[in-house]
Length: 273
Image (cartoon, rainbow, N blue to C red):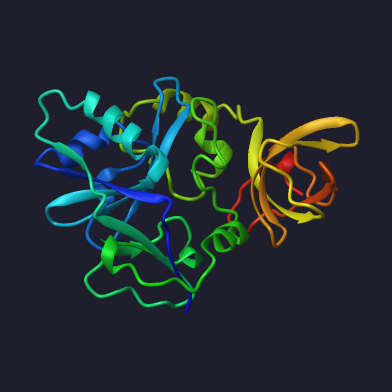
């Protein structure tokens, strides 16, 4: 049963009686849904509705734990702290904690703060536990999440450029459409209800040398997107212009890409394969 420590992840802790209401007004999802055993996936946006960071919110009776990209942990804590004002909340990095993922029926380690991955049932679970207690891994998490078509923050999204609906946050339960205002909500809602989406982050099968992130993708002579993250076993994510022709091979560097639309992804009818 595969498990994988995630050394590129870090934990930011929020404590204090206002921790839920404080975060609720800042991020894309309903923080009140984060309870022991139930995680929430959410994003922090610019006021213009562009992606800055995303993270999983896991809860204990005393705290909210943000499972975030290690490279963004300091930035995330600093940005959130700017909005603290008189709220009774404290933020702190927790370098003593580590993140573990498991799937395919793997058992959660005893004593971990854990919850199912809220994006897809087949994604498995995520757990936070003391870094010194992280078990050795026997699974390839990058391959697992790319096979499911799941984005992984900065490798797949561009800070202050990407919008959430490009990366599947709607289908993957990363947005609450009913919780009320949050930073960047206006553009996110307008993109959905006015059908303004022009690009999608789509899984691709790669034949040939794995292209580097940012490599242009072409349909004939026309540039239609760029490569994002990938795996040596021929899996990747590509940011493609709509409409997407799922049965048409694309070129990217020396490789050929074939879009692979996962079961959970909803494309505009004219953009579907």
